Amino acid sequence: MNKFVFLIPLLPLIGFLINGLGRNFLSRTAVILIGCGALIASFVLSLLLFKEVSAPGFTTQIINLFDFINAGGLDIKFAFQVDQLSVLFLLIITGIGSLIHIYSSAYMHEETIPHYARYFAYLNLFVFSMLLLVLGANFVVMFIGWEGVGLCSYLLIGYWFKNKDYNNAAKKAFVMNRIGDLGFLLAIFWMLSQYGTISYAELFPKVGTASPYVITCITMLLFVGAMGKSAQIPLYTWLPDAMAGPTPVSALIHAATMVTAGIYMIARSNAMFTLAPHTQNVIAIIGIATALLSATIALKQNDIKKVLAYSTVSQLGLMFMALGVGAYTAGVFHVMTHAFFKALLFLCAGSVIHAMHHEQDIRKMGGLRIKLPLTHITFLIGCIAISGIPPFAGFFSKDEILTAALEKSPVYYVLGVLVSLMTAFYMFRLYFLTFAGSFRGTHEQEHHVHESPAAMTWPLVILAVCSIIGGWVGIPSVFVADAHLLGKFLAPVVASQEMEKPAVHLSHEMELGLMAMVLGLIILVVFIASKMFRKSEITENTETGLSGFLANKWYVDELYDVIIVKPLNALSSFFSRIIDNRIIDGFVNGVGKAVQFSGRQLRLLQSGQVGSYILIMVISIILFFIFQLYWKF
Image (cartoon, rainbow, N blue to C red; front, side):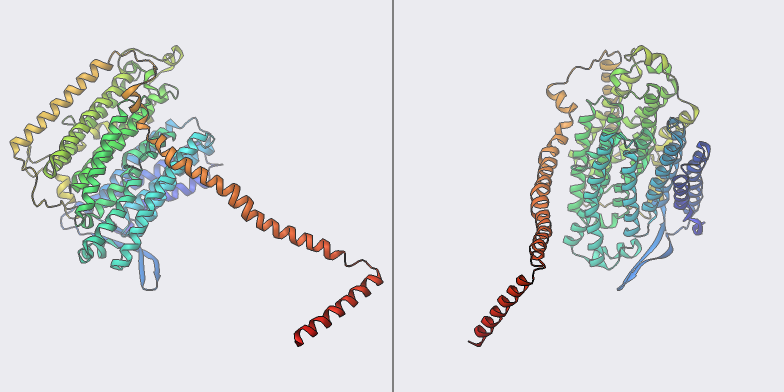
């Protein structure tokens, strides 16, 4: 099977080429079959590969495809690494990606065929880049996929390129990702200089040979790359603006692919990060700070997609906190469960937007549970799962993160619980304002509201089932001993950091008590949200005070605009008007004008009059003799 691993990323690439080059003459059916078929085939191959990797006695395998760089003693292979971590991400990417492709076939039906094909071509290229990222056997191949994902996010966010605001959102995502990518690139150069290799198999056994200072610097630079791709403070503001793209794109970017690239990179490099405790502390602090900040913002957002976007940033913060405290398996576990329920929530949001004729303001919704029964049930399942209520998927991964956080520091635990409570509140606020109460939209909207077609609802059902049972692969030992199947599966490649002196030693009784306490608080928060928003007659009144502060997202975008965007625009304007137009262009144009002026003056010497020529000759002879006499002295 390993001989055919290259087909997993190759099939989406072929789909991209066929749909992209044939967009002007392919039929809509052909576009769907090519775009969706490529992903489904990759998913089937990933399942077969997973079966092989799960077999007893499997060892990590490196598949060398060709020499990528071989010069001056530098030998970098274009190679794939097949192990438990890469296969798990293959299943998430191709599985969720296939459902999103199928969903898109109906959601994007209003697009003309050339743009329809362009959309599926971009989706295929996006998945190809992500597969390349997780399959790469070294940091260079990972970086190629890393940059490919960034490019595709730019193309997909700005898919409706005639809208200037959407183009600005795409550029914002592209620029902020480039900031993080510079840190990643510097880390690669430093690793090459320090260790002479960037292949995982050769690099990770050597990491302990460098000084703690070097390892800390390299891991900090890697984390800068992860901050950009996975939207952590201060490089998080691009992610909510990415809602400019079509809703299935939002699901693809926010659920299982692009934003989890940073998590994958740190989990893959866990051997290095475990040796850099200072970096881990920074990761944990920035992670929980991002989770808190974005959760507070989500409390007051009224755009259905913006609420889910800030929810994604918050959940990513929890994942980074898990990585920062050394709970790599817990972080990856939450990536998996989050992929299920966040993809479900975004696709449900797309179903609502589709039914409401592109209306996204939840203040203009309400009462949709009757007209959209399947969307309503699946959205409710997603809300329960993300809130961490058992036995849904989010409960198991969140509990594991909170337990690891408590063992590291009670402060992390308390803040993590606070984030979880806010998550439950804003998600059920979103649920009640959208589906409960009476309809608050126009009469025409209410008349046309209807359930989405089967191509959109079946992916919702599948994701809802995964959101219910997806966490059962990580049942904590407090319930069933030795039942954490995911932990045992990932053990060969993702180690748990050994805590020298845990802040808190958890007994089974204490762990169960904490679970019950957190669950009780979450249920209380859901009850409060129900009382506040179930029959809410919310209006578009302007928010003031703290509510206005949160509704305006802590004014972070405005702050960035004042301290970064406007000064850069002013500087670029200065360079354009003064340096470029007056100095550089003035010099170049001045040279041209000087040559033209000199030519016009010299041309006057060619008058055609013999007397003038004799006069010039005599003057020249006199000057010649003067020079001769001068040099003799």
